[in-house]
Length: 231
Image 1 (cartoon, rainbow, N blue to C red):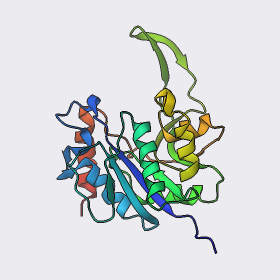
Image 2 (image 1 turned 120 degrees about the vertical axis):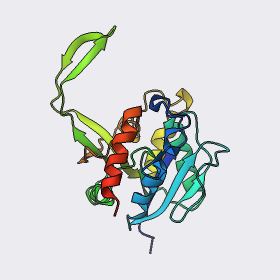
Image 3 (image 1 turned 180 degrees about the horizontal axis):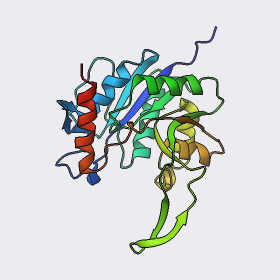
Image 4 (image 1 turned 90 degrees about the vertical axis):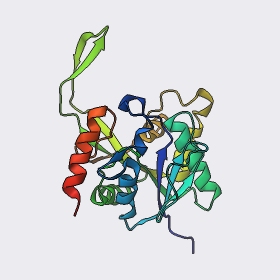
C-alpha cells in the first residue's frame, strides 16, 4: 500500500530584510525574548500533523542552531523564490515525495498560530490544487505615479496574501523551477508560481495578526502581541 502523503513545512530564512532597518537580517532580531524566527518555529512545532520542518538559511549562516522539531539547510538563494525552490529540491533529495504537501511560511510571520495552520490544512487536504491564507482587502487601494495618486482601484475581490501557502511538493517545485532561468521574475509567492502554471489556488481566510514583520515599527507591535500570548 502506498504511503499517505505527508505534511511538511518549509521556512525560507535567507533574506536580508532591508526594509526593517535592523543591523542584521530581521528574522534573527530578538522580539519578546527570542529571535523572530524562533517564535515562528515554535508555532509550527505545535502543529501535530507537520512531520518535518525545514528552515532554509543563507549559505554559511550559523545564527540559528538546529533544534527540536526542525532542521536546517544552508541552500538559500538570492531571492525568496530561489530559496524556496532550493529548499524543495533539498526535501525531494532527502526522502520527501512529490505527492507530499508542503506548507511554505515566512520566517517573519511570527504571530501565526497552530489554529491558523490547521485551518489551512483542513481546507486544502481535499482540494486538488492547494491554497493559501489570505484576507480580503479592507482599505481603499490607490495606484501611484511620481509620488501622487494616479487612480483609485476597486477593492472588491482583492485579497492580501499571507502564509503558510500549501501545495503538493512536486507541483510547486516544478512551477518554481520553470521560472529559474528568468531569475524568478514576477514570482512573489508560491501561489503566483502555481497561478503561472495554470492553477487557481484556494483562498483560506487568515488573520490580521498574521502580519509579516517588515518595517521598524512592526517589531514593537509583534512584541506586544507575543507578550500578551505568553503564559
